[in-house]
Length: 346
Image (cartoon, rainbow, N blue to C red):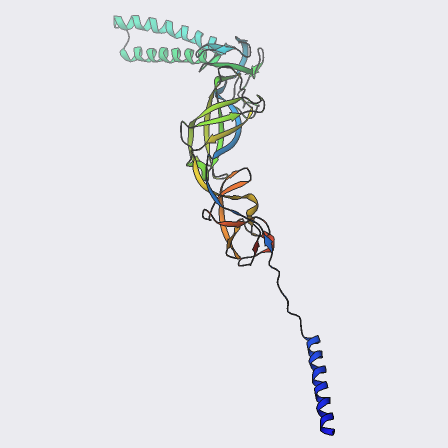
């Protein structure tokens, strides 16, 4: 009887201890696998467009002046006049010219007299050569002073402004209107039947620009009208500060719709190419770096993959670094890491 009682007590103690251990046992923690969505990277053909901005400038322009200061006696054409190359635009005071002419007349008389005596043998060849040299120098001085007192058009163009007006004294000083020629002058002449725009092309796109290439140009000041420009000049060096090369494009402007100084947008269409496109929302930056990544789905896990942008079309981005058909995450990107398990919702 006593043995049976001890057996019963032992069994009761074992049951109680087992229940207590079960209650105090730590719970097993389970990690929730995030639900995500994805898209398939696909290969498409597209027409890339290089976009730039710049300011319209005249095809040629110059501030015309003289090598010597003087008073402006007469301006022969009003502003907006079309002039031809070689036409006299402005006449300056001719005091120095008159002085040179008077000296030339006196030297010419000496030269004529010495020439007659030289023919008779009354003067030596050395004396004749000396007076002849003086005559030649005086003639050159008259021509030079006449050029200094007359300002003529070096090319066909339009008079757009007078920096110095009639009656004012012209002095050699830089032009005061920024953005155009800074040389000293009296009258500003521009060639406007053709205008040009200068753009700065980065190193990454420089090899894509070729002479003769066409571009579409728009200007807010003109509205929806578009113009066709042609690449006419590529400067053969890069800026040491911006690392860009200067490219000039020309636009016919016979109707004078385009004015120098207008802000313009330039779009250069490139040949069609193919690329692997992913949604914009699939791209993310790693904190502290400029590198972009996507999460590629491999089975039930994701792999962080570095990519490089090539071109954007609406909300799709052409990238390198992923293959055609790769499944990339579009949601839940901030909830996963390289190697995470995911539950892709179809």
